[in-house]
Amino acid sequence: MTASGARWQNWSRSESVVPARVERPTSAGAVQRAVLAAGRAGMRIKAVGAGHSFSGIALSPGVQLDLAFSGVIDVDEARGRVTLAAGTHLHQLPSLLKPYGLALENMGDVDRQTLAGATSTGTHGTGAAFRGLTDQIVGVTLVTGDGSLLRVSATENAELLPAVRLGLGALGILVDLTLQCVPAYLLHAVETPEPLDAVLAAFGERSAAVDHFEFYWFPHTDTALTKTNTRLPADAARQPLGRFSRWVDDELLANGVYRVTCAAGTVLRPLVPPVNRLADRLTSHRDFTDLSHRVFVTHRTVRFHEMEYALPLEQVPEALREVRALIDKRGWRISFPLEVRSAAADDIWLSTGQGRATGYIAVHKYYRENPREYFAAVEAIMRAHDGRPHWGKMHNLDADSLRAVYPHFDDFLAVRDRLDPERRFANRYLERVLGR
Image (cartoon, rainbow, N blue to C red):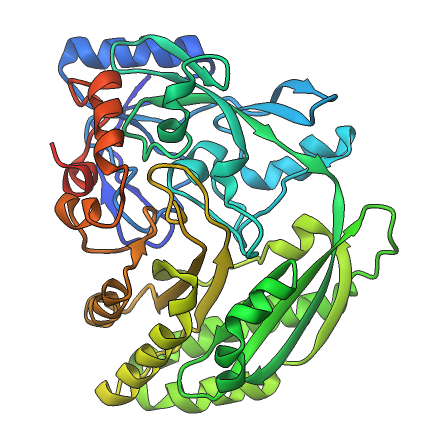
């Protein structure tokens, strides 16, 4: 346990806090003791994860927990289930799962988060037949508001599973999670620029026709960079990108040059459209096959703010057209691309994909730029299309507006009342999105 006094900030620098105390528990028992101590002191307590949420969901002015335990706890090889400590980072999973010939069924494109943080905020990947990371959870152990250790699975407290799989950090401190994994596999990736209008016209059909489909659109251009990933067995032939080619595309252009152009664009706004058109021209066709995580994950070092909304899948094309018209009408200079993905429906109460096939539209701003006006205007479009905001990304919705788009919102609140009646795990963000 340490007295803090040091300011903590998230990756994008959009949120910060000075915790009253920082603790680094190394076991579930240590988490229990920390929760009980916080209760006796009348303090709130939260686990902070890796700080990759753009919202204030992880902020803890009271006791901040940095979970100092990670790795494999147990493996059920017959069923392909792996129990991992909650502080495990996603980028550690490939090496941890490799000895068992397993992999995650689906992944997002960032792997710096902790397992607990990624699942608590609803991290997802893409693929119309595939659900997000939370749907791969078959059991969790968490410390509840009274310091009790609670196990939830299909055979223990099963009625809580639809809530705790995506709990926003509001139900307790996760200490371990059991994931349903799949046999390791490869992905054949095809990345190519295509006309944006044609991609939008066929978005639903293309999402359904392949395993994983997504695209990026740079504002001020007419081109989408499409990414199509096809799943292959692990013993298929690998044809990975060459080390130099990957470095040029993913490090030199995507991070190095882009960092310079974003910084320049904050000073000289007229530079943004021609720079985006240059990036469009530099985008080349790529065709390669590699281990699943090496295809799903993108290495990003340029910091940004992000807002992402989940829409009914069929409404994505029209919503993006409206965003495009909005940018043109306002005369904004937007340097960061928009990202568009899809995912299957699930039955997790606060999942953005709950009960409907879902498409995602994410907008970004360079971290040194104020995103408020752009994000608020885009948010209005997303809400008009029955949108649900990503819990770990920036948005302005409150409990009343979220209740309207989540049929099980009050069911979740009832579980919260049961597991944390004193709101030991609350903070300002949770008070806004869930109420007090």
